[in-house]
Image (cartoon, rainbow, N blue to C red; front, side, top):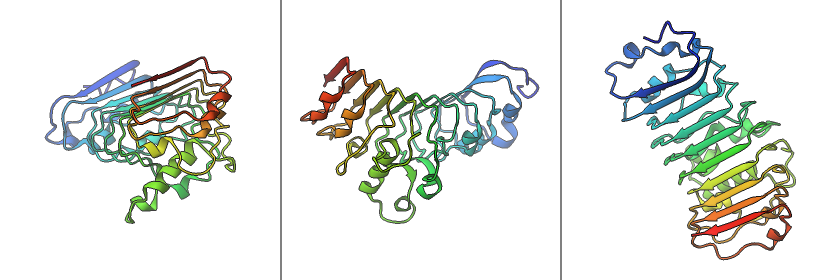
Length: 279
């Protein structure tokens, strides 16, 4: 019924309420990419469809779309079209029980807000290998809000060789994630997350939050004003890079039951107005 409605504007909310016997013949929204005036698209799965990946492929929106929210998707991989929606400003992906990686998002030039929540099997955020991405000069150039919650198996930002046939190396993947978001002083990625002002990390591997070796510098995060770290039960100490967050105003730590101490570098947070620690 939507095929001819190419002048639709505003928000389109699609709920997958029942199993489709034949995805190819029953999906009447294949021409979403013709609806150039849509600004917001919400897709919600209320059950395990069985053809989720094929159905999602057919729901590709027009590149003009600005806001995408997807809930309850049960496919193992997300459609590659996500990387091609260049005007996206806000992405929310929530309640993906089986998805283990996503297409590359770091090159979306206007993306300001990214929420990844309840992605139990997510191991890497990008399905590309580090060798394909490391030369990029820009990494989320417009991102202001980053929230990663309840992703207990997240081990790295990019797919690595250890995830594709070799024995998995937890340390190397955690370090890879750290080097991406928290580049070292030798990194040339000065544009990494340079506009980020809010970051929340909850229920992920402790090594992703706290490096175990080396000196880490967050000189790129000069605009970060709010930092939340929560539900990291095995986190015992905070990294020294905390002291480099020169614009940080609000810092909240919650449900980190084994956190024993705060680093001396906390004294360098000259802009800090609120520090909240609660269990």
